[in-house]
Length: 321
Image 1 (tube, helix red, strand yellow):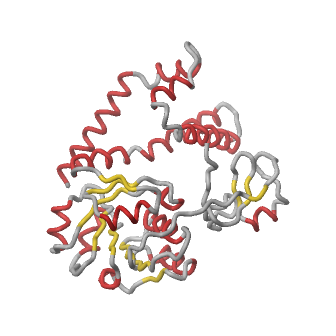
Image 2 (cartoon, rainbow, N blue to C red):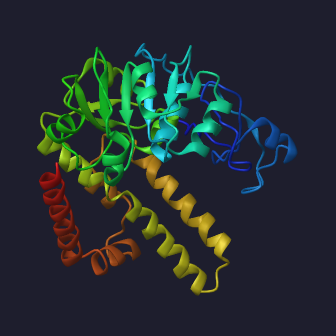
């Protein structure tokens, strides 16, 4: 399996660690910046093992997309900026809206190619690719009165807002593309679903881990619904950790173990030669503990409940889109 190139120091949590830059790692891939590695005496605080220089990985060259504007600088907006600025070669000029002012200002201080504009129209006027990363419920305020013309391309990250509705809102004939980037674009390791295919947009996301164009908005909605299961996984892990703490295990110890357990699961997903059901079977012993929890907790009724929740969400997404 490939070495996981983590993009943040897990001690100071601020130092960016691009794959082609210096970092220190232990044999379990705990990753630290050079300063924190020195402060720790080159000893991993988690496993007690040695911290050594991490091999550098050549980052993909940035795609010449021109200037990129981002309206709405929340978690995904920040991840996009980190990903676009962390690759090899010269990154694009990035214009940020004043929405999310603290985050935008912090990114502008960190990256010399990033600047914060006075308003959303300034972002549009100065950009070749305009990314709309506002919450769907905030779109009326954020997009009111925006004038989008010329050779620009607009990329919408707003769930449940279809192409037709967005075109009516913006009153524009420029190309409109929907996309579902995930926080892992920060490390340029996320496959981003797009619709419709557009060479500039798909090339941009190819540089952030890969673009997955789909044939129509109906299928795009399916991927949007799948994405909505992400935080359920975190709550599942939090529930496991809380249960262990109730059994007398120190909370920090339980948290560390659960994180390590499922980081290993994440790495096994990189093996595309085995189906997901095969991976599950390979981790089970007949009549063993894993099979017992799976069959008594995630039984047919629970599977049907999850399927029903996804069906209902997809129906809502299609109605609103």
